Image (cartoon, rainbow, N blue to C red; front, side):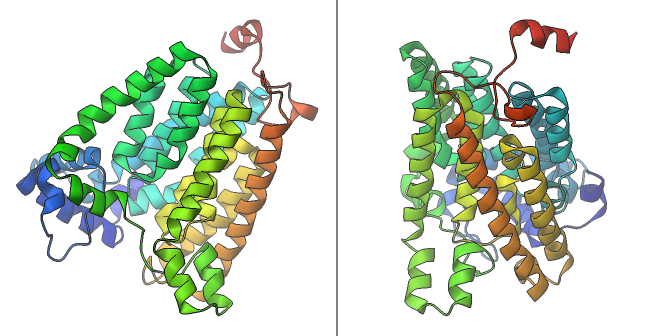
Length: 383
């Protein structure tokens, strides 16, 4: 928040200011059908429009919009730190949970992307992890359904985890599935319904079919470019082919959720991390997708990812442009990609190593994907 209050931020801050003015003129529903000269495509889900409308109203009262637009993500990171602590402490020692929560709080990835960049990715990720926690740990399927719908209503990225959440709810029995679906459906109808009824085609083109930018800075497209693969291959990867990678992420999440529903927070973390790993779009703010989740998978996995990729984010934002990475930043990004791949591999291994019916006890007192403590132990820790 200090960074948000004392820095102008990248171009996205000014773009969001333009979006907020447009939403004020056209409304959060009709915004999708209007061309916005001088601005990129408005690719944000319906709830983001209502948020921008509120922030623009506050800015007209004299508050800085550049600070306001970065407040939701910064607050989401604070909530996410507590959320990760709550998730991990049910599966490991208290000190491991503390370290993971603090790791999220001081993550250079999140400080850079939320405090400086100010996009909505962090808010969506926080809601997605909250949905998994509420469903698997809190046994609150109605609230979990609401949180799941909120996650894709802020940014569409967490749509890859929605099938896994439904599968985990199904594994919990019919009452759990019905209540989860009711919470999800009610919030989805409230937020998405007016847009789907009014401008469905424009919503489909702007949001549902948005493939990201065409930059070649990260992951698969970066490696394809370095290896000199044909231009047609890279064009396909960034075009219609990116849906294949999305399907792989969805399938992985569904498979893990069916096998280990009690490990749902870890499953959500793996799915979002895999989406970043296979992403054919490049953006420093996208690095947020795995920042908190890797700490759910393990402290060392989170530390390695947030360290390597955090340096990428900080140096990337320190350069001339957030979409023009220097050679050292590109090399750091490549290292971060392999670190993420290794962390996801160990995370999946730990999830599959747990018992199908309930989380196991902590192996060697280390794994964050271990058994919840008994209610007696939990009560003692709280007291």
